[in-house]
Image (cartoon, rainbow, N blue to C red; front, side, top):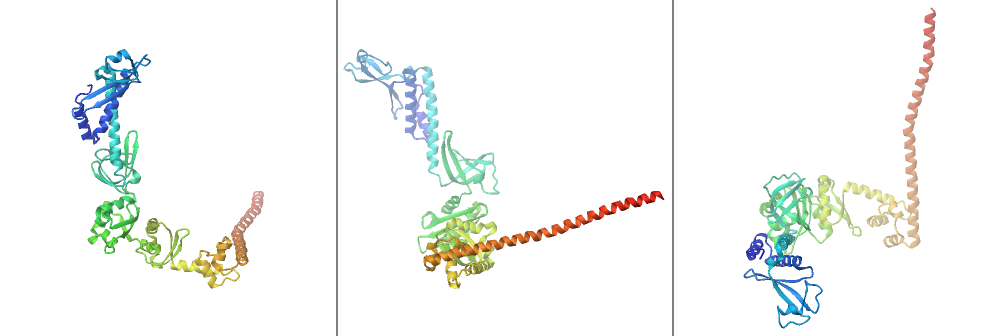
Length: 463
C-alpha cells in the first residue's frame, strides 16, 4: 500500500485532531477511488474495503460482462471474464481485485494529496461541529496575538477572534493573558471555522450568573432580561419559581459575594438586579430603581409609558447620560418617558386649558380626553370621529363639530404665532435701520466738511 501502517496513522490523527475514525476511513476510501480512476479511467466502478482490525485495504474494480466492449475501464468481454469467474454470463458484474501499486507514482502522489486535503477538511468540520455546540456559552482562552485592534485567542483546537466592538472599554491585554468570553457565533468558512467571541454581549452577563449562582444554573431563578452599557452599568430582571427563594437575594449572595465576582470579571461594571413582575407597571417601577415612582401612565397600543417621579428623583431615574432609563427600556421592552411631577403638572394644566377652549368641554371631559391620550387641540384635530364618540359618548354630529372646531382654533393659533414672528422680525430690523441712518448722516457730515477744509487751505495760500 502507498501509505504504510495506515491503521496507526488513522488512530493517531483521530486521537490528536479529535476526528472520528469513521470519518478518516471514508476519507481514505474517497482518496483511493480518486487515484484509481485517474489511473484506470473516469468510468471505473471502484470499491474499497478497509479492515479496521488489521488496517488492510482491498481495492476492487467492477466490470460488466458484455459481448462487445465499448468502454474498457468499465466493461470486459465474456472470454476475459472467464479468467476471473468461469461461470460468468453476459450482464454479470465482476469484481477484480487490483494492487494499489499498479496506480503508478503520479496516481499514488495524487492519492496522498487527496488524503491530506480530505483530512484537513475533516479536521475543519470536526472543529466546527465541536464549537458550534459551544455557541452561546462561556469559553476560556489565551491571548495569542493582535491583529488591527482584534485579539486572536488560542482555544486549543482552534483560534477565535475578539473584535474591537466586542471588547470591554479600557481593557488591556498582553500576549499570554487568559481571556474569558462569550461564544457569539461560529461561522463555517473555506479556511475553517471562524469563532467570534464577545465580552460586551448581554448574554455574557447571563452566562456569568449561571456560573456564579447555583439557583440560576438549576433553573429555580430565571433571568428574564438583561441589558448592558459595557464597562459602566447593567440591569438584569430576575424571577423565582420557588416562593421560598428570593431571586434578587440569590443573585446578590451572602455579603454580595456572588455579584461581586461578576463585577470583578466585568472590570467594575455596576449591576442592578431587579425583581421581574407580570404587572408591567410594577416591573417598570422596579426597573427604574433606585428612583421612587409617583405614578405611571400606560399606552398599551404603542407599548409606551409616561413615568412621573418626584422632582428630587428625576436625575436618579434618568441616570448619568440617560443610562438608567435606557437600560430600563431594554429589559422591559417598553418605551419610557420620565417626567418630574412639576413638569407633569405644567403639561397637565396646559393640556386642560387647551382642551377647554372647545365648546362644551369642561374639566370632567377634559380629564377624560387627556387620560385617553388627547392632550391638546392639535390631538383632537387629528382624531377619528369614531374614537371621539367612544371616549366622550357624543353623537356623530357633535364629535364631527368638535374636530372641526379644533381645526379652526388650531389654525387661528398658528396665524397668531405667525403674526408674533413677523412683529419680532420688524422689531429686530428697526435697530438695524436706525444704525444705517446714523451711518448715512455721519457720511453726509464728512462730505460737507471736506469742501470747507479745501477752501480754508486756499485762503491760507493766498495770504
